[in-house]
Image (cartoon, rainbow, N blue to C red; front, side, top):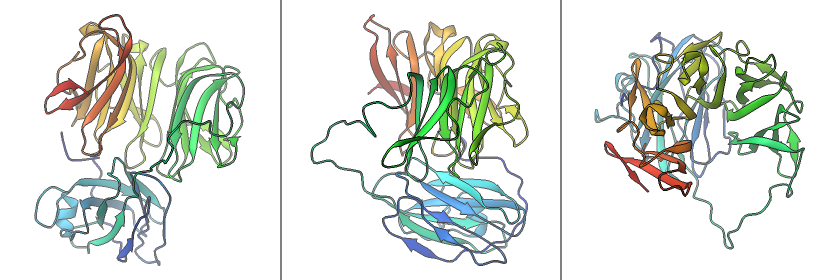
Length: 391
């Protein structure tokens, strides 16, 4: 897969960053400014680090992440995603910078209890600046067991729940209540509404909740407001929910929405697109409109889309593949096309309700309802090199 996270314009912008070290931090906020004193703060989040860059000029910032308390490469090496010895960095990325405006970049899927070095630069003739941090230890429990968070039940009768964690560690959940979309979060003592309850224009299905690197909650769903059943994405703007781009932007009726964020905060959504023969479509938001990621209808007839980003920023999507006997297929986006990850239709039999995620080393895992022997039990598979095997 390509090591490039995003194809950004390579404009020059100068910024500097003091060397700082935070041990045991759960996340890192890194501010970069060309003419103003930078600010630095931390946000609790497990297994991830968030860098916030701010410059007095508009252009592109470049980041590499190295394991251990390592030395950074030159500016040219950081821009090329390399370490000081010329080897590929553990992670690399770039993001757009607007003068005077903070820009966030989140690196997820990090190992626990591990030291890392974050390197940043903007152009071949600028200095390379760095910050060291450590991810927190894995949580342990003396008497492990499940308990209700904030009470055994809360809110109204609900359906289609979707759970996500904000960078500050607070859990959010989206669900359908009164047929409309509602999002709540747990503040440490009780669940509270995020914006208004039932904020969607009309009835919804297939909610998918995700939190942007800056902490803004977004939710995608099948929008039944005008009977079109198309895809809508909304986000919290202060205290009220507003549409991200045009509402109901899919080509036709849609279902099985799956929302996720690229490391630079760009929202992506995958869904079954009945405007394109029931195939999978993936779109991203370019700050104005939703645009296709690769070709529309990238699959054959498909259901149960699950969209996720690999640690290197590559988008992947898993789904039930109707063109391969209803088995599981995973594709990744390479340059301008979607390609099969391993073999298409790799599950033993037909499968439903695919859920895709990544290990810190970049290995994709997918869980699903396995219909092979009629038992409809859970199976988990992972990619072992070029072939999928059962976990």
